[in-house]
Image (tube, rainbow, N blue to C red; front, side, top):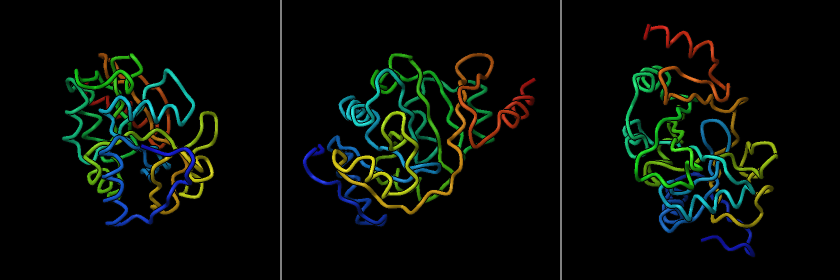
Length: 213
């Protein structure tokens, strides 16, 4: 686990960095890494202590933590059942900047869902990000790598500035090019519900859902 008294090491993304990240995540630690949108805080999403550590680092409580996947099949580890809306939107917009909030499976810890019974999952469009997540076990938490209330980190130095200590590792995947976070849509009910509009417009979502009618 992280040592609050030591500066956070930074490694350039590559085989060595991914092997180190795998080891960190495997022992319950937290890494800063580039996602398809901004930099995120990555930990084993099925480890309650690791997810709690992520929330402690951000200084927030009572909010669900989203998960990024290495491939679409990983969603089955977190989602109890795919609704028709989930299947349609994931097939249309994955891989991409769309987070789908679905009913959580029985093994998903409350620390991840914040007691909502739901979990947000996303398959990033960036191939390098998917490979990194795959090296770390196929799924990682990906809440933005910043303190609560601060702007999202767009580079490894940004993450280091936000967390000079406390993280186990920062993997430098270069600066992000995103200008918006992922769009978040709740697909637990009979109708899709917009939680946050981001890189994918709500209009695009509505147009895709028109095929269900």
